[in-house]
Structures are given as C-alpha cells and as structure tokens.
Amino acid sequence: IVGCIRIHFLYCSVSGAHIMQELDEAVTIGATVPTGFEHTAAEEVQEKLEATARVSKNRGRIYFDITTDTLFKVHQLKSLDNLFVVVKDYDDYQFKTTKEEVQLDWQELAAKLPWTNALEVWKLNNSIKKRKGRRKRTNPTKSDQCGNFSTKSTDTVPSDPEELWVDLESLEVKENQRDVSSQPEDDSEEEKHSEIQDQESGVTPLKFRVTCNRAGDKHCFTSNDAARDFGGAVQEFFQWKADMTKFDVEVLLNIHNNEVVVGLALTVESLHRRNISHFGPTTLRSTLAYGMLRLCKPQVSDVIVDPMCGTGAIPLEGVMEWQNSFFLAGDNSGTAVSRSVNNIKHILKRTHDGGSSSGLPLDIVQWDLCNLPMRSSSVDIIITDMPFGKRMGSKKKNWELYPLCLREMARVCKPGTGKAVLLTQDKKCFLKALSQMEGLWRKSHTVWVNVGGLHAGVFVLKRTAVGHQDGNPGAY
Image 1 (cartoon, helix red, strand yellow):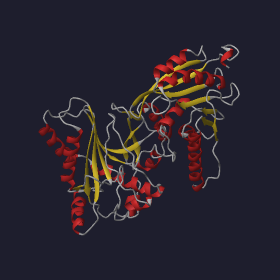
Image 2: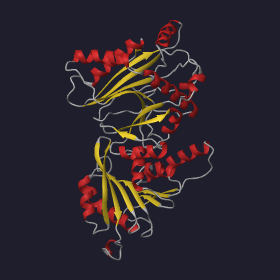
Image 3: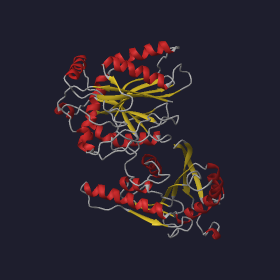
Image 4: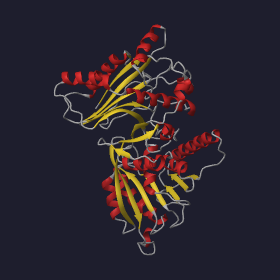
C-alpha cells in the first residue's frame, strides 16, 4: 500500500568543504533487502562493518548503527537493495482513531522530528556519490512489501552522470532522479529562513517527495492519506513547494502496524543493479544471487557450477566476491549464453577502466543441463535459479526436467562434501523430484523468498556419500 507526494524546495549555499567533511557521529542506517534474506544481510553487515543489524518486524528491512566515516562502506555491501538514513523511529506509535486526529498528528510530528543529523548524512552521501563518479542510471520501479508501486513517473536522467553533482557549493541539482537521496541541508531555523530569502535571490529550487509504505489493517488512513498529510506538514515546516512529477530527494515514511520509521533515501537506484547490462526475461536480482551464494559458503579453490545461468547473475556476483573460487556456468539457450558473455565483457571493461588488468575466474558454456560435459564427482557447489514454469518453461515440463537435472547434478557433485543451492517457485514439483533421488541428496534447510511477487524457496541440499556405484547405475 503506497502513497506519494513530491515536495519542491530550495538549497542554501553551503561550502564544498563543509559537505566533504566526514562526521564521526553515530547514525542509524536502514536498508531494504531481498525478503527472506534479512539474516543473511545482517551477517554481511556484521562481517564487513562490525555492526549489529536489527531485523525489522516488516520483512525485507534491516537497521544498523554506523559512524558516518564508514558510510562509503555501506554502499559496497552486496546484500542491500536501497539505503536510507533514519530520522526517527517509533516502536509503538499510538495512532489516533479518526483521520482528522491523525492528520493533526502528522503536522505536529514534522515540526518536532530531529532532522539535523539525517540531513548532514544526506550531504555527506552526496559527496560520496560525486567522488565515486557514478555511471548513468536508469529509473527502476520501486515496490513495497504488498507488491504495489511507490512511483509512477518515468523521470529524465542526465546524459552526464556528473551533471547531478557538479555544483556542490550552491547545491543546485539540475535534473531529477527517481530515488535520489537529496534532502534539504537545513541545520537550523536561521538556515531555513535564509533559504526562503534565497528564493527571492533566484536560487534554483529543488524538489522532494514523501513515499509512504504501509502495512497493517488497524489504521484509519491509507498510504496516500499519510503521504499527503505528512508531506504537507513537511512543506509547511520548511516552506518548500510541491511538485508531483519530478523530485530530487525522497523522504520515507514506513509504517508497519504501530512501528513508524521516518527516513531520507540515500540511493539513487537499487544497489542490485550493479553487474547486469544485458537483461533476460527472468534475470535474477544481484542481491538475491549474493544471498544464495552466502548460503553456499564458498571456499578457496571450490569449483562452483550454475547449470542454468541465464544472463549470468549468479556466477557474476560470485566472481566479484569470491575470486579464489572457480565458476563455471552454462545454459541450453544460445541467446542466454550470449547475454552472459556480454555481461562478462561489461564487468571486464569496468574493472579494466578501474585499473585492474586481471581476468575473471569464470567460463560460460552452452550445454545440455541433463548431460553436462563434466567428470563425475568434480564439482563442489551447484547453485542455480531453476525455471519456475511461469515466464520460462512450463509447470508440465518441470515434472520431467526437475528429476533429470537433479540426478545429473548429483552425478557431477562430490559425494559427501558437495552441496547445492537451488531456487524455484515450483515447490511441489521440486520436492517430488527430490524424493525420487534415492538418497543422493539430503535437504538441509529452506529459505523462503519473494521473487517478483512470487513465493519461492531457496533449497539448500547436501550431497550424500552415496556414489554412482552405490545408487542406481542406470541413472549415470
């Protein structure tokens, strides 16, 4: 359930030196993650930032505290989709019983929120983006937990990605971005009033929007109501102007039952759009691929195979993070293999432009996944996104395909130590096929995930010690 209002505002002049200053203040960062992989994302935060992440009651979100000098590291995490800095969170917000009372509450809330620290983090975040020299971006559609869309516009992106950040001293953003995290730099009441005066001086105004993501059935208001009323209150408090079609900054209002979090977005587009330049009909999100790979726990020198690689999202994510393992990927579709090759070239060009001359420990092959050109017992890990029978293949074909590919995977996987991590939405067919494997696979556990609105399972399997000489010889 989503509602939006976009607000237009002015920047005051702030020196570039002030913006580039890195604070060592503790702030709370919120992040959206693939639903079902919240704890996996929390593990990465602990591992790479030495911070303890809290999993939200609202699935698909985590929160963690950092000092602002480590903000750039947050953008390098592989599990996170979108980032925001928390202005204020309420664990048990007491909503009033009528719309009129709730509207008055929103007006009072906007005026008493502690905006200052969050706005400083937003400014620092912009300077990080400028230093990174981000690539040209597209505008992804952003959805909430209920599967509805939080934006409708298709905003124009500058042809030069640096154009968005060139004038830091006057902080004039010249184009808008769908998820840009540009919030007003108003650290005091005096600065707010100076902004209004700057408007009379001809300073180019900026825009922002409020996006409300709401879940719960005990509210007397809708997401649109909350976004409109809270956005109007923010507008009145800062004296900014509304623009319903273009924006440069995003204020987030996340409501889950009685939990309320107000934040400022820190990502222009989802961080999962990092490795893929050539998309297919069922390209897997890089963040979901990373979560699956973490379940594998790849080790040095492991041979990792994706027999149905599609556009190569899983092996590409793997080689970027686990460069001491070797990845082999393939597909029976020549078109899919071509897309994977083009995505590899894209990554290589990016790494070469960044000064690296090394290649990637990855090969792409066109093959028959039920007759892999590999020796028996030669693979440590098999990981793949199996056809759901929706956009690719069919449910009927899966009943024949799944048993054949599971048996072939068992043939090439090392008995006793090998493992498989397999994603599918066709759970009934998969579990039936697994039961026919005569003890070749043992299911360890299942992670339930949301893939494009579909309830799917990531099945973690262990290869038993049963070899082809002990099992059904005819299957090999």
